[in-house]
Each structure stands twice: as C-alpha cells, then as structure tokens.
Amino acid sequence: MYIFILVIHIIVSLVLIAVILLQAGKGGGLADTFGGGGSSQTTIFGQKTADFLTKATTASAILFLCTALSLAILSSKRKKSLMEGVKIAPVAEEASQATKNFSPETVTIKEVKINPETGEETVVKEETRPATEEEKQDFSGK
Image 1 (tube, rainbow, N blue to C red):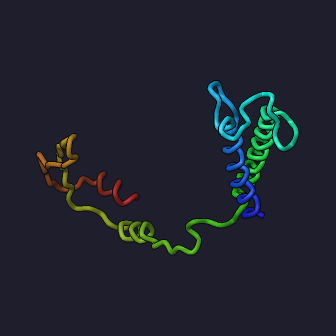
Image 2: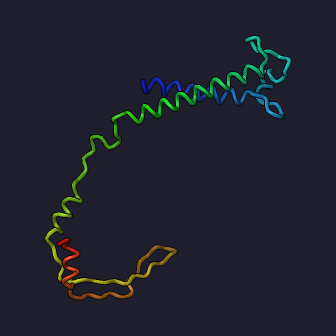
Image 3: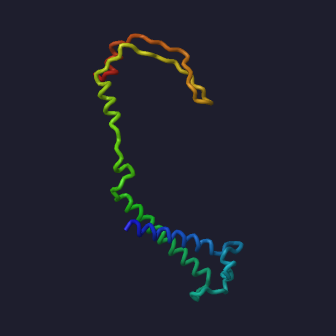
C-alpha cells in the first residue's frame, strides 16, 4: 500500500509540474510553444486551454496533498526503523560499572586557551592536587 501511494505521489508530482509549466503566464509560456497560448484555441478535449489547465492544476494539487498526507500517516505507523538489526555496544553501561566504586585520589585542574580561528587548545596552566572528601563523594555518586 505504501509503495503504491508513493508511486502515485511521484506521478502526480510530475503531472503537477508539467501542468504548471504549460500554463501561460504574463509573457506566454510553454503553452504557446505547443499551440495552446491563445484564449480562442481549444485542446483535444474541446475546452479552452486556460480552463483545462486551471482545472488540471487544481485536481493535481488536491491529489498531491492527499497522497502527501497519506504517506505521512502511513510512514508514522510503519514499524521499520533505520537502526533495526544494528547491534549497539553497551559502552555507557560498562563505563558506569567501571566508575561506580571509583574514588579519585588526585584532581587535575587545567586552564586551557582555545584559538577561535583553528579551535586548537593550548594548556596554559595545569595543577594537580589531592582530592577533597567532597570531590571524592561527588565523583563516586555516594
């Protein structure tokens, strides 16, 4: 069903583009090229060209909107995912397990200057000191 509506949508899109390009604008248009530029000329359907192209544009636009809405609704209900079948490594879980009972003994504080043009970081000042009890508790989550 989804593929069928998608094919109809593509066909309607192409028809809508063609019908819009065939309409005569202020300075004529492609309709003049195919002999449909004058208001007294008629199409093979027996209607005036301008009337036919206006109705065709309206019908194509309505069909385009209906198919676009249908595709949006159908794709929201589809269960397929781009990530389906892809194995994701449980890195975050392993990292939280590794740091759960870890308590730092030292803390390193770095003052970094960033070059705005290149994004390069330069360490201006670096200080290592023993961690306070509060820092140890904050890090371990206790």
